[in-house]
Image (cartoon, rainbow, N blue to C red; front, side):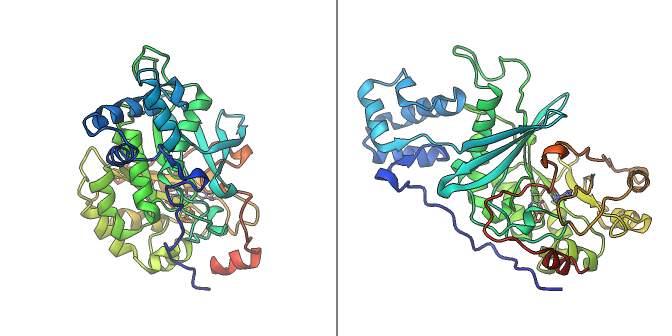
Length: 393
Ligand code: SAH
Ligand code: SF4
C-alpha cells in the first residue's frame, strides 16, 4: 500500500481581493469588521453602531448592494462602496433530485468549483457545506478523496454557501419581519460534511460558523450545526471550545488495520488516540452526543464481530451511531453492504443501548449523496489502479 499524504499545508486566499484592493465584507467576524470599518475612515465613536447596521443588512436581510442600506447616509454608503465589496460564491448550476435534494455547483475565486447539497426533510432542511476544494486526505471509499486538493475555502466562501442557498430558497426575511417570523426555516441545519476536512481549515470554518450562529443575522443555533471530521485529533478540543457545535466522527472501522486502509489519517492518530480525544471532548454531555459515522462496506467492516467491537470501543462516550450505506461512484473499489446485513448490524448496536439510525441515501440520481461529491475542475485524476492500491486491494 502506498503511504497516502496526510498534510494540511494548503493555500488559503488572502482576504484582500486583487482587483482594486477592496476587502470583501462577507466572512469578516464582528471584530474584523470593526477593524476594517475603522481603517476605512469610520469615526471611532460610530464604528460599533455601523458594524451592527451593516451586519444586519448583510446577514439578516441578505442585502448585497450598499445603496439598499437605507439607514446609512449616502456619503457613508459611498465610503463603503469605495473600500469594500459584498461577494459570495457564484452558483454555476443546480440539479434537483427526484427526492427534492438540490445539488449546487458554485464557483469561487480562481475559477475553482465546489459542491453544496440541500436536503429537505419533513422537520428540517439541512445544508451540506464544503470546507475545501477537494481534500488532502485520501479515504479510499470517498470520491472527494480521489480529487487533488486545490485550496482551502475562505470564511466568506464557506458562509457564502449558506447565503447562496438562502437566496435560492427565497429565505431572507421580508422587510419588516424578524428572523423566525416567516414560519419554519427551510434551511434549519448545517452539516460540514461536503468536500474537504473542516478541521484542516479550522480558522476559516470557525469564523464562518460564528457568523452563521450570530443572533443578529442568520442565527442558527450551535446545536443545529454539525462538523464531521475524519479524526484530526489535535483540533477536536478547539472545535468544542471555539465553535461549540455538534461533532461527528468518521469512524468506519473497529481495528487499526482496517481503519488505516479506509481512513489513512488513522496512521497518524489511531483509534485509541482518537477515542481519548473524544472522551475528553469538553462539551460531551448526555444532550450532546458525538455522532459516530460508520460507512457500511460489504465484507470489509460490516460483520457482527465489528458491531460488538464498536460497542466495546465507544463504551462510556455519549454516542449515536449513524450507519451510512456506501454510496458508489465511478471506479469505487467497494460495494455497499446488503440491507439485511446493515439491519442486523444496526440491531446489535441498538440492543446495546445506542441509537443506530441508518442514513437514507439522498440525491443519488444526481450524485449528491455522502462521499459522491467531486468537482469537475480537478487538476489530476487518480487512476483506478491507484485507487485500488491505496485501498490495499
Ligand atoms: N472530511 C470529513 C467530512 C466530509 S465526508 C469527514 O471525513 O468526516 C462526510 C461523511 O461521508 C464522512 O463520514 C465520510 O466518511 C462519508 N463518506 C465519504 N464517502 C462516502 C461514500 N462513498 N459513501 C458513504 N459515505 C461516505
Ligand atoms: Fe476527505 Fe472526508 Fe473524503 Fe476522507 S471522507 S477523503 S477526510 S472528505
